Image (cartoon, rainbow, N blue to C red; front, top):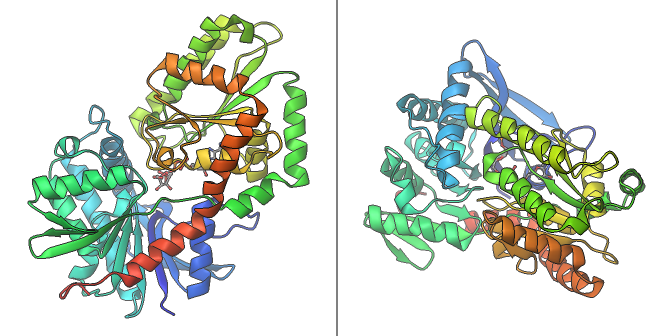
Amino acid sequence: MSRLIVVSNRVSMPSPDGAQGGLAVALQAALRESGGLWFGWSGREVEEFTGSVNFEESDGVRSAVVDLEAQDVEEYYNGFANRTLWPLFHYRVDIAKYNRSFGEGYERVNRRFAEPLHVMIEPDDVVWINDYHLIPMAMLLRDRGVRNRIGFFLHTPWPPTRLLVSLPYHERLVRSMFFYDVIGFQTEEWLESFRHYCEHELGGRSEGEYIHVGEKMVRAVVCPIGIDFKNFREASETREANAIAERMRTSLRQLTMIVGVDRLDYSKGIEERLNSFEHLLHTHEELHRSVVLIQVAPPSRGEVEQYQKVREKLNELAGRINGEFAEVDWTPIRYVNRGYARAELTALYRAARVGLVTPLRDGMNLVAKEYIAAQDPEDPGVLILSRFAGAASQMKEALLVNPYSPEEVAEALQQALKMPLSERKRRFESLLDGVRTEDVHWWREKFVAMITETKVPPGKG
Ligand code: ADP
Ligand code: F6P
């Protein structure tokens, strides 16, 4: 059996308290089975980059990490990854920053990763690169003589061509993707945009799943990520989770809960969501004192100005809406900025009658799937989902909404709050079926099989 080498910006090793994201759990299982390795940034900043690799082994999973120096973190992670590509890939050309030093830092750090990585790769290994931080990695590995199968999975959307061309050196970035054997996208829509770019900007042509550009070709596929369903479901049924859910219900007395859980990011549409909730309160006075919106948003990427701005904006907005509507015995919005353990999160989802997941643009959105997995099958809640989340292509039984329209979101909230049990169950059962079958293990097995089975043209493999 060949080894799997997973490469991502962040490396997540098994932790003693078992608090792990679904992606980490799935990849760790694969790495354990194949005796593989997870390579990436340690998350640490050092005075000067040395290139030395720290190996670690935990619960049968091996990792290899490198430290970066301050300039690397600023230009590669805070710069090109999170000030340039992240907004651009989420259709926000208006806030994307095109600073040449970011591009240079991005390429430098990718080279700094490729250097130690290429010597660790053995002839039979299957290499799997993840996300927008590491797009040129296959090209850099091929330059260093790596002939193995290499796949790339993009966790974010891929932008329409007319937006992507606003990126200086866009062609150089996309051409570097033709050194992969397979490229995976979350949805057909992102894959179509990629194909469109290749055909219109690079003069490429498509033949089934393969895209040809000059002498080069790559297989481009759709493979939507799922959650660790079994693990999540079990966590939601533990005594601890039930006790927390009960405590929440008691603390909220007779209030009906609507929940939003997101990393604090402008792409998640939290501001628009609060505006929609405000619209609901304006138009439905009978809901005063009977509903509460719990919005959990742990801060992320705090060194990037746009993230600081959205944080300030949300503090101000939540305060203003509460100031306008609150009574001495009722606060309409509970806005919390911290992370929660798995049991607490599942309890929160289960206690909420409505899961309000309204990103303005999202590669997939795992919260939507987690909300469904955590529901009580006898009394399930209703998922309201943005049509602009990748998850909407699989979760058609959710109430799909346009997150930019406060009226539409408020109407969906009304519909969800009034929905009879029979309809809630019907929608839930259909959604649950998808979340259960197309889980994170299904995704990982399918994508790794695609990398392994893909025909490699001469000169690549
Ligand atoms: P993204 O990858 O852009 O952050 P996703 O919705 O796909 O968005 O994944 C977010 C993950 O982060 C989910 O697994 C979710 O449970 C987790 N998460 C979000 N907010 C919190 C929180 N406050 N506490 C713990 N986990 C959280
Ligand atoms: O899903 C997109 C993504 O950027 C992942 O690659 C990453 O693990 C997650 O969001 C959190 O972002 P960050 O690593 O920048 O905190």
